[in-house]
Image (cartoon, rainbow, N blue to C red; front, side, top):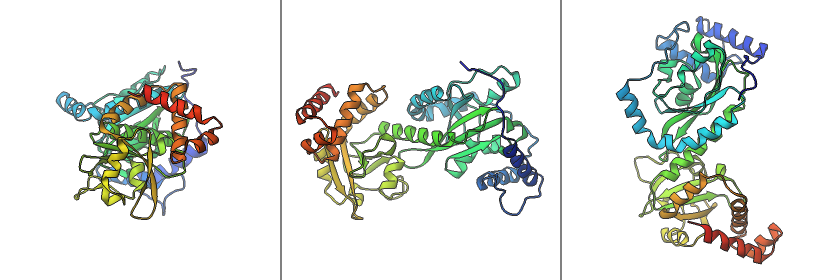
Length: 378
């Protein structure tokens, strides 16, 4: 429950700087260089809107697309919505006291899912929530400069506050956004965090970007593959947000990857004209990866052709779906304990005695916890 529904106080200097830049650009007297208060990508979006014949005084209608079109969009984005639903639920809890709420769109800016909406007392503010409906077109062509259209155009996380939106009527919004990339590296949608008459929260750009990565990882885990490689740099204990995910088919061809894996392996888009094979990435026989998959809870160091090495934990296909289902559940203390011990053993390259010394427990405890973890594993 919200503690207050009164409009949040604004920063006068920031609002004034936005208004000055807005008058200069949208009245046709663009200044030399980009005003410090306005990011260059915002003015690029303004220019695209003006070039398309849009005018700030025209208000977006936020009309939903036709029924058949909405059903077609929902069907096409079923996997995206499934992957994003747990993230939207977590975001709704995180944003509960801020008057911000999450919106999920497809790659064309059509809303495909919405998180919990805030309780607003003002009727005008409640009308501003009309954009938060499945099927509404929030692309730049329809809604002008917003975090949604800008993130899809710039393919990077963005923050947008009040008058930085193109239309006068959308200046009540503040929003952060991040694009979503599928397992093949193509943009499949966008995650937006929007508020109505709210205090500026630029830190939400980081939250949107981090949440988008979680959705992308879920899409990779849903993607069909024979082997799933969990990649990290040797010697570094990392959480899921910094873990590379790479899928391979039965012949060793790459089926999908998350952004972290693409960056670690210096590969741009997976879905290129020429198929990418594991032996294009790793300087070891493919059979060694399949052998590693048959040994549970074992990580191996994999050499890259660059001379670098990565640590890889390899899962066979039948365990990928089960691991994804477990990841959706809230972890219990003993599960977190078991994961910590497994990571310590991985970091020690399988040396249980060294892992026990690092953790400050006995070798017998390490063996017992690892055995209990295997017995509980599906």
